[in-house]
Image 1 (cartoon, rainbow, N blue to C red):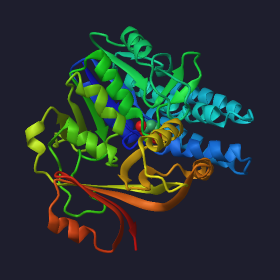
Image 2: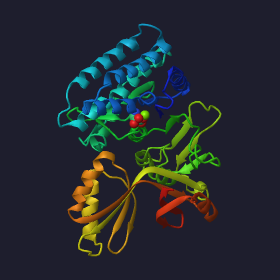
Image 3: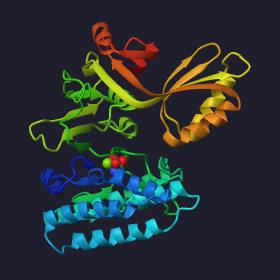
Image 4: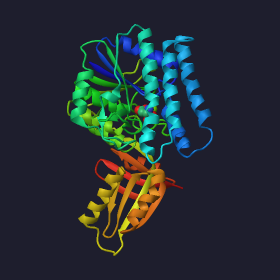
Amino acid sequence: MFVYKFGGSVLKDAGGVRAAAGMVKKAGTALTVVVSAFGKTTNALEEIAGMTWRQEKGTEEKLQALRGYHLQIIRDLFGEKSIAEAKAEEIFYDLEGLLKIPPGNTAEKWYDAVVSFGELLSGVIVGEAFRQEGIPLTEVDVRQVIITDDHYRQARVIPEITAKKIKEAFGKEEGVSLTQGYIAATEEGVPTTLGREGSDYTAALLGSVLGAEKVVLWKDVPGVMNADPAVDKEAVHLPGISYQEAAEMAFYGARVIHPKTIKPLVNSHIPLVVRGLFSPGNEGTIIWDLEEMVRHVPVFIRKERQLLLSVFPRDYSFILNKHLEDLFGLFREWRLNISLIQISAISVSFCIDDPGALFMDRVKILQEKYEVYFNRDTELWTFRHYEEGVLRKKMQGCLTLVEQRTRLTAQYVIKRI
Ligand code: ASP
Ligand code: MG
């Protein structure tokens, strides 16, 4: 059995949905298919949720635009008055109902309920497209299968219950099971989400529990490159990389793979393949136990919207384990992702994903015990298997705030000047 995941970058119009159906038909084996929301639907839903929450005007137009976008795809695929259209209209009716309920003090919970609609829509539309192609289909509502805690927007999967439910719902010997990525629910059935771009992780989770032969992420790029081709003209395609390399790349910001995707696959040695849906001749990138292949491929990854936070104990005491324990505890509670740490005698600096609007409240709490300095709008640049010449060239015109090097990796927190 293979797991195929189709992301929003390929499922963005009728052509993309047809191409996905074509690929599924060609697979020639039992398949579990995971879909994300079409195109930029999750962004649109996020915006709608935010505007509704802040009681701003204009949500109705945004909602109608999103509805129009989906109806266009449906009509391109099935013509007028299709089953898919009736199903989508029902979903939009429910979404409208939800947007009328004022969120009160449960904004995060409500946010997850709203953004889940993207995958609910793509799920039914892709399902109808598969049926139209004569694909034997079982549809599974992932919210009854992937069970999480109630940390909305970044929910953690409860492994035992989830594994049991996945095995019950999927694992058919033949045919195609179709389900949604990114969304999940608590044990009580309240919708949650696994963190933005989390559909890759859903696919990996299903693949690992079901012992898939491989998990394939179908993308609009032909695989993983050693740098972002949009900014680096010398970027090259990587045919194979190790789990370790992929984990490093994902962690430090290579957007082609979601950071949580690797872990579920490593222990079961399931290969993860990243392939271009529209690049038929290209085998893509295989991520597997490929230790030797990767040693010498230089990789350059940029992580944007970073925040450099420096913390000093107020009494000028040395940084001790108790301070670190305290700070890590708070970061864990706030689910701040730390990408780099640097400790000096009397301070400790963290490079973290900027938590946006929440940040200043966090700073206030830290200031109760620490002197706090921060620098927003920084970037973390990571060079794996680096060469001095390349480093020097790339770092021109940047202000280096932090530098760290090991034998394999050079990292810089920089500010563009
Ligand atoms: N639709 C979700 C998002 O855009 C999940 C995903 O695309 O993987 O964040
Ligand atoms: Mg998406």
